[in-house]
Image (cartoon, protein in one colour):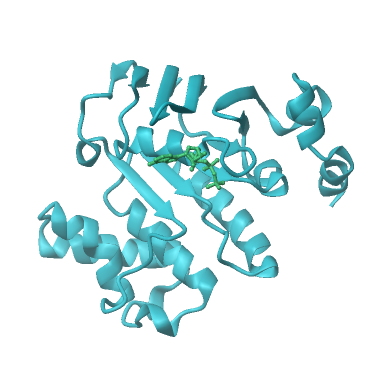
Length: 244
Ligand SMILES: Nc1ncnc2c1ncn2[C@@H]1O[C@H](COP(=O)(O)OP(=O)(O)OP(=O)(O)O)[C@@H](O)[C@H]1O
């Protein structure tokens, strides 16, 4: 496993937001944290990112304990729904942001930005500002910005939530392809089972702070481990999706 959560507990004023959460994600895989609102998905992501600290349990990356390592030193990239682009910066400057912080050489930054603009098929749009882009383009820039410093792990919190249905579908398959191409281990949060089924290699189903089941989309749909998963997953919807 590339990243492992072992027996993680987290409470907020006595409320269990994570209860004995354990799961692992293999290197290069794309995992989805899927569950209803309030089931603890974002809390898990925030602990991996170092934005919240677990009360107990271990966060391991390649076997090394990460709990006490500051978030900024964990080599993690983020694409958060509400983590908007910097409005007064061009697309190219947004992508360069993480590299500037790392004080990389100007020529190196320029090359990396061009490479990423190419990767997200926005080669000629580097000089535009965020308000001159579509929602889908903005999320592609957010993705490039997160990838710029070569993170070991990419975390995405409801990355498609603010985007309309048609573009969301396109962006999903685009994201899956990109992540496969770059090979970065990724975890994304969603409450939309179709999104999880379509994109993820592994799905971690959460409910009331606990992990209900971990498995491939196929396993989750055809062999639900608990009555919660059985009720939560809409099997006909999954089957229709697989027929497409
Ligand atoms: N900083 C906090 N202080 C108090 N309670 C919190 C805090 N952060 C999260 N919680 C609570 O922990 C529970 C899990 O929240 P979390 O955001 O992880 O759920 P989620 O599954 O991501 O939900 P959503 O899909 O609505 O974003 C919720 O009941 C929430 O109110």
